Amino acid sequence: MSLPTEQSGSAAPNLPVVAARNAPTVVKRDATVIVAGGTSDSHTWNLVFLQLLLEELGFDVVNLGPCVPTDLLVSESLARRPALLVVSSVNGHGYQDGIRMIGKVRERAELSAVPAVIGGKLGIAGAQSAEQLAELVAAGYDAVFDDGAEGIASFRRLLDSLPQRVLT
Image (cartoon, rainbow, N blue to C red; front, side, top):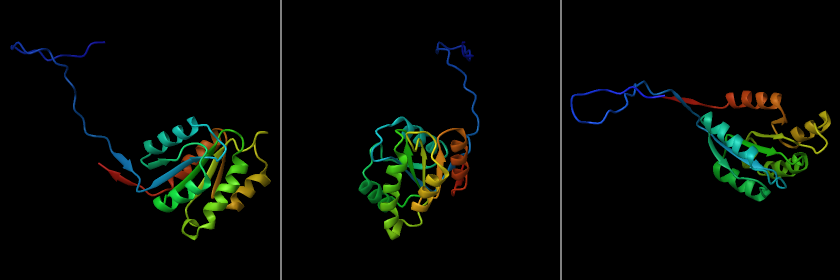
């Protein structure tokens, strides 16, 4: 495929003609999201995917990476006061890691109102029972997202409910 060029009578090289258009509208969220892997989960692709998705939706993202120590999660949450805290699991130990992590976050009064969610592969035997999902919510998560398409769709709906402003 060749680009159209503009011809002139001078010896200047033929340069491609680029059509100008208005800059697209950008949605910028007035919000920071912290993304973290579970304390025992060394996977990173899920965290990179979440970071890219959140950034595409206009959020500022702090990706703490895999195997996040609970103390680091708490200290970063205190320092950044995120609009959302996301814990993601791929190794199947998300339930156990998640219970411990959110317990320490919720111990801090300053973080008691920070929305926190967990999702991914939360158990090694497949989907968690309704009782286990309820235990995660009772421990302090605002939402639990199962692995799979419905979990992703539910997560997107949650993100759409967070604050935003439009930049032009």
